[in-house]
Length: 117
Length: 114
Image (cartoon, rainbow over all chains, first blue to last red; front, top):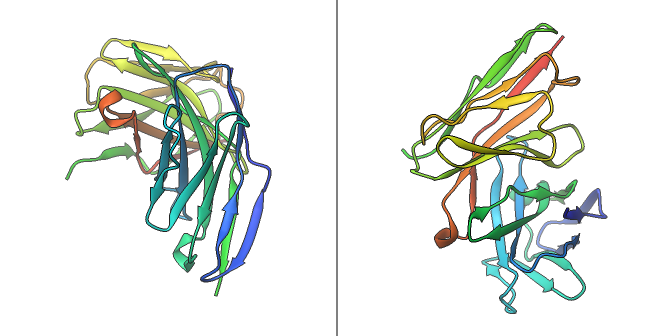
């Protein structure tokens, strides 16, 4: 079974600052994806970024980037130039896949990120 | 518009009653999933289905049942055997490997059982 751990229940930064959210995971699988999802107060789950485990290059999406350390089983999210709209719960998630398809996502407990004006 | 719909947004039931939550998608996705979210917790997988007429148990399937008779629909029944049914329930769907198995989520149903 896989586990995902987010060690920061809550973080608060000033607008325009850079913030890094931590995530570690435990698995014996070789084929998997890692994701960061955002859940604003509306509770709609929104995909922020994804990383394929077999790719060494870290994924980047505009102001969002990851630091994927496969050997250390670490997958942190960096948000640059933070904006008020980034205030939300952020969940790290793991997904195993095989030729038959993908299992469901395994989520961490989340980090509540607050961007202060 | 393509998307995932869950109805109703809020649902209230008395203890001992079964209740069915609806999930419909028009994205032509093959796979569909049900998750449960409790306060201060991440989402936990209840059931998932990769093709019509087939589904697998997730981490917390006890007290729940599902069916997948149509590609577009994946209803979840919360039975009276579920000890703590009050929660926020999220449905998701995804394509396969070509789209990195990215899951799209519905808006959720808040179930309250008293």
